[in-house]
Image 1 (tube, rainbow, N blue to C red):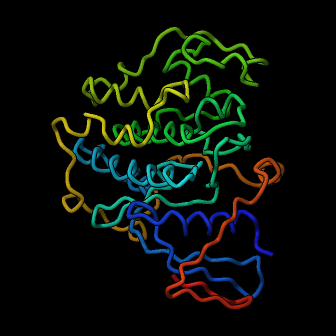
Image 2: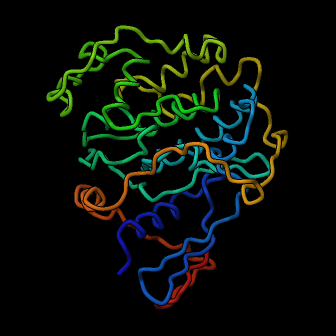
Length: 318
């Protein structure tokens, strides 16, 4: 039958329709149920590949334009009880009209209240929230907001803010930049699985301002800090971030139709710059993800207008 993860991805995409999320046009199933194709609109760029070709970072006005679109898409997901669980620049698409779209819902899932335990093996390493790195299985929308903060920082410098080589190296890079957390600033920190087993080097200071002081005003720096807050309960939400005064101070966000254009990805020469690590997948970890995430989270409600279905080799059109 259909792989559970494919069912979940299709279900989530159908539920998540929004201007800043990739649009599903058709679901095509091959001659057997192992071959499933999701047909979406063509979008010219992913932002990771685009930034690798840029000699200068986005301007502040361009960064604000991109961030507002990203936050609107994430807010829509969270408002519909969906966790993306793999937000990163290579999963953000940009068309020639300056419209950003969130893509790749392979790790996304619906969640509910009360929150159930899920696998911590989610989110590509460089964008993974510290609570996941420290082994929690009880998490919610703040994991996506940490990823948004990492993306914000990457827009400013066109370099990833925390590019660890392993989970422990990733934690050390975060702690060195933001200071080592404690029970005082992060209630429940001492009870996290990895904290019980590991002693981390003590870094007393937050060094973000030294790194981003030339890119951000005090107000912008405050927003970045709120994205990269250790305590998930205190981390900024997408709704709160959309109302932040960073987006109303000068320079203002540019309009999408004023966004510069670049040759489409298919027209550009491939570079040999280092890529971000892949999303969690495969082998024992994939089996663990399937097991620990419990039910499929699959709730496939097809739009009635224009929908169609058949047996193997069928396509669903929307």
